[in-house]
Image (cartoon, rainbow, N blue to C red; front, side, top):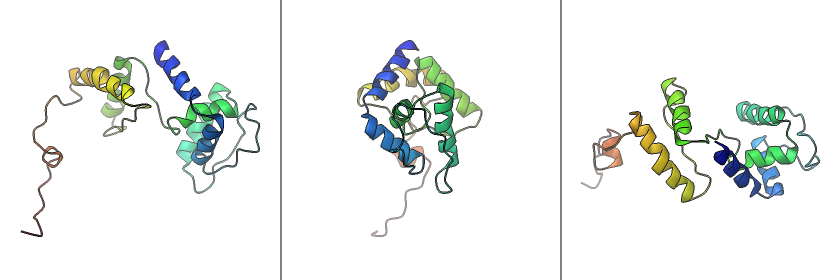
Length: 160
């Protein structure tokens, strides 16, 4: 877990602070953050009526719980665009995915590796086998095409 935390801190630090601030601004519904000191506390803000309140509240909770500065909040949030990040051992990541799936909090996942190909390779080589061992990820496909595997009928050709 320590290795995963260190990797995450390293990846977060790779985003230029001004870019991170602009990404944070977009996530917060276009809030003008340029007027605030980057090394001062994350400003208290309210969501506007247009932006999603869920992501807004999630980002503000990250800042409050960690007592983060604007710079720190921006750098933590920028890489994953404010989305949940599962990190840790393959078993821990599989635990998180299994918990969400079994409690019906989701019906699937979008895997968004922070860099390619390395982190995607890690997921495929380390997490997928753990999910397969638990019976949560298929080991074989029934059909030859995506359409076959989704149980979809082939549409009639309009040219036939």
